[in-house]
Structure formats: structure tokens, C-alpha cells
Length: 373
Ligand SMILES: Cc1ncc(COP(=O)(O)O)c(C=O)c1O
Image (cartoon, rainbow, N blue to C red; front, top):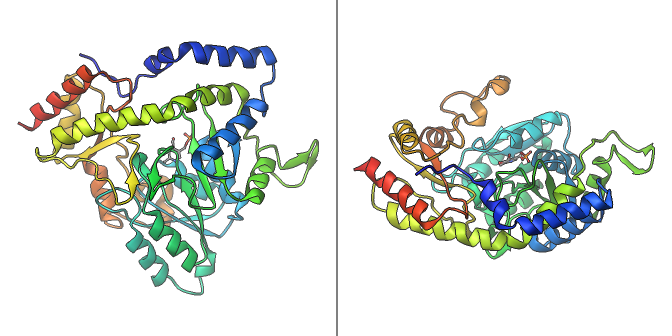
């Protein structure tokens, strides 16, 4: 049996009619950029996340860049984040001329460790602390970071919070949705994400009307009035076709997330006593299993073994950000963040997409168990 890491064709076929109608409607309208489709998706996603405003942008990366910029982050500033995430998180900081300051993760959840976060801020030179502008907690693999602690720390040290929700649409922490805690929540509609487009796309959600207004200006070349440019901006618009597609998929999202949880619970049951680390759900969290990530000592042999079984698995992420070649000048080294480094050597994600059949899930379970025999 061959099992890919993700099967987008299956997802498409399951809602083909709705998607085809939505795409055709946009084509017939010939309204491709920032149309009512985009405005409607902004309203629907804000409502879904429990916030009042949203702005569609061209990607999840741009969502982070525009959100940071709208909050005033720029050259010489410091933004605190995790070293164990996709590169776009810190890239957004660096691209604005700010400096990422990494803080190690919790071993249990792989999210930023609030104790270490507070320690790093406390230990910092008070004369340099006013450069510290924001924290980007990343809700990795589909579960929220400890937002109660992070928001408390942000308040104490007057830091803005930009949530990186690229992997966590629909995740909840203490009953509130990812993206509704900080000044902004940033989403990606990249095709592999739980809510995805037929290409790139992103969204910033916020309760701050002024932040969203600024993002809406930045995404169209810093302009509010045609051909008048108040500031240097970007071309970072969400297009109508992608918005129409995401609107259709949003209606199915909660059902898809439920199926992901169902598959994860089958995996949890099967793997709880066989010597691997299964995903730990943090207190107050409702996980969405964007990834079902295990940690296993013989990780590299396991990846090869699963390839022989024709099951696609993937390591997210094999090199933590502080060890990336482009960040040499930040002067981190091996040993700077032992928990993130250990995770990058041990983790591997299994297929967990909602379209997996029970038969496929059973085959994956049997294969993992066979490897550990
Ligand atoms: C944690 C995280 N942040 C940011 C991004 C960037 O999103 P995009 O690929 O839409 O630019 C991604 C996904 O690719 C991600 O996983």
C-alpha cells in the first residue's frame, strides 16, 4: 500500500462540485484582485477566530512581515521567537532589519518555553531592553503555545505579540482560538496547510482596527487612495480565486480537524507503550494535528524503513533556525538551544490528513509497531 504524506487530490475530489462552482463564479465575474470574495473571507475568518478584523495577504510569510511592520517593528529592533519552526518565522523578522532573539522550546510540546522566555528578558541588559519589541509564539504542529504565560510576560515587559498560526487554524487554548490572543494572528493558506488554497495565500486577523487598516494599506504599495503612496509598501494581495477556494474549504474545516483528531487518537492508543514519544497535548489545548509528530531514537533508520513500506513521512525540522547558515552572524552555536537541537534529531511526522482511510491508518500503525519490534 502506498501512502503519501498528503493527498490533496482526494480532498479536491471530495468537494469538487463546490470548488468548481466557486472558481467558475470568480472567472465569470472577472474580478480577480481584492474583490468581495476577499472581503467575505476576511469577515468569515475573523468570525471563525473570534476577532473583529482581518486582512488577506499573499502568503503566510507576508502575513508575518506586514503584521510586524504594522506594529512598528523595524531596523535595530529585537523580536523574540522559537528556533524550532519553519524558517519564514524568523525570516519575517530579519527582512525588516530587526534581529531574531531565539528562546528554547518545551520538550513536551515543542513550543516556546515560557520560563526560558521570561528568563531571557529578565537577564537582558535593561539599557538594551527597549529594542525588544515583540514576541512571535509559533503554534507548532497545530497546537497553541502557552498563551496565558506568554501574554502575561508580554504585558509585564510591554511587548507586542504576533502569533504565527500558519500550522494552527482552529486550534484552541483555554477555549479561545489561535490568533485571538496577541495583537495579530497570522495564517497561511499554503496548499499543505489545514485550510489551504490552490497556491499561496495568507491572512492577518486582529482586534485592532488600526493595525488591520495599516496592513491593508501596506499590501497595496502603501496606498489608500489610488496613485497616492503614503509609505513604501508591498504588492501582497490575496487574489479572488484563492479567497473563493478558501471560503469553500472553511466550511469543511471543523469536520476535517475532527477527523485529524480521530486519527491522532488511534495513533496515540497504538503507540502509547512502545517506546516512542507521542504528541503531548499542553494543558488547556485543543490540538488540530497539522502534524502528528513522534520522537524516536533511531529516527533516520525509521525514515528509511517507512520509505521501504511506501509510507511518506517527513522531518519538520532537521536544522533549527539558530544553526542556519544565514544566521552565522547571530553567534549561536551547537548547544545554544539543547531542547530544539534534540528535537531536530528525533522528530518525524506521520501522515494524518483527514482523507486517510481506516485501512491506511491501520497499515501505518502496523508498520510503526513492526519497526519497534
Ligand atoms: C510556522 C510557519 N510560519 C510561516 C509559514 C509561512 O507560510 P507561507 O508558506 O504561506 O508563506 C509557514 C508555512 O509555510 C509555517 O509553517
